[in-house]
Length: 129
Image (cartoon, rainbow, N blue to C red; front, top):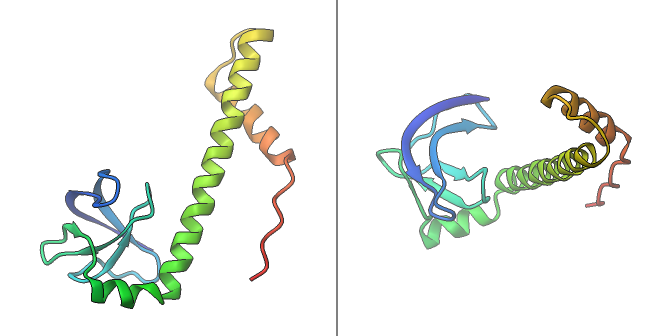
């Protein structure tokens, strides 16, 4: 994996500022026409000649639609976002419980409790493909 700085550009899908790109399948840097998946919203964009982001053309959309690598990146992103939401939910629960029933804990102690709690939650069965 290689990360590269790129000119700050708003994601065409969600407007989040993107100023870096990470190549997942090689150590290459983005080039004009390279595909990008926004980590925040999953929107698929394409790099312009100046490495800013734009929406794909109709022809690019058709080409990207069947690319298994892009689908794999989107699945991995979805899984990461679900894990982050799960962690945030458990952390909020732990913080509220501590406020009601015990002395205030440090951020590190709260993270330890969240880690132990998440480790005890059974993993969801994977869907068969």
